[in-house]
Amino acid sequence: MSCFLFHVIFVLYGAPLIELVLETFLFAVILSTFTTVPCLCLLGPNVKAWLRVFSRNGVTSIWENSLQITTISSFVGTWLGAFPIPLDWERPWQVWPISCTLGATFGYVAGLVISPLWIYWNRKQLTYKTN
Image 1 (cartoon, rainbow, N blue to C red):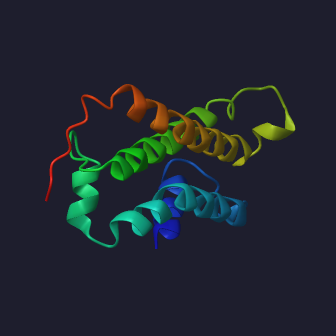
Image 2 (cartoon, rainbow, N blue to C red):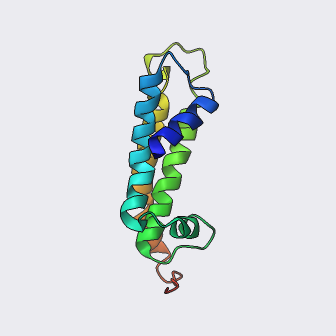
């Protein structure tokens, strides 16, 4: 379901509708794998839990904190990966959606590295609410 939602969002943001439909959908699958699948595994289909985790100061565990960091870093990496697309460099990696896929992958990996470091540095300030 999230693959189709991401696909529609990408097309609304300017991805080719007909020419590169398979590439756009596969990019949606990759981004869903980085963002939605971990959320479903950890939070389940509970919409209130999703809203709580992705709101400000809504996390209640270290796992949710890591989930929040990796998901946001995947989206930021995707967004940063879109910057080279309109440049006139004529490089093979500028073709849709290669740079966005690389950005999402690097963003996800950065989130996997940043989240334990952030938890370690802020372990004394982390006071999680119990449900």
